[in-house]
Image 1: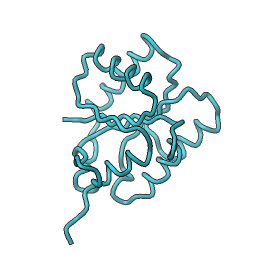
Image 2: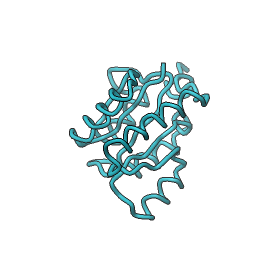
Image 3: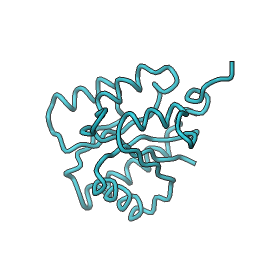
Image 4: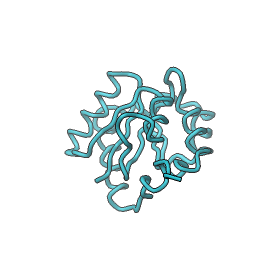
Length: 147
């Protein structure tokens, strides 16, 4: 089963994403992490709970400690995590943010301002995406090997 890793520091935005998933009848497990450092630790298997085998990351840009751009740079430079599929969620329409996200190979850049039905359509689109594409098995590349 595909898991959703939501990296979002704002409780209200996290609730909105979860509500949109629920309204779209998407029952996939959601793992919420509050910033890039916490997300990297989780994905690298350094947290109490091991990361799932298959996942899509929904990533906010503006977060404390490690923002979305910094997270993407660290993720793409990590040989165990560089294939992860990431959709960046932001309120920023700044062309620099958008270009920087795509320079780090995000699967899509989505404006949070498209709330309501637009956001529900986005979530449904993401669901269709992960139902038709083959995603990498991150358990083979993200968990430390034993020797």
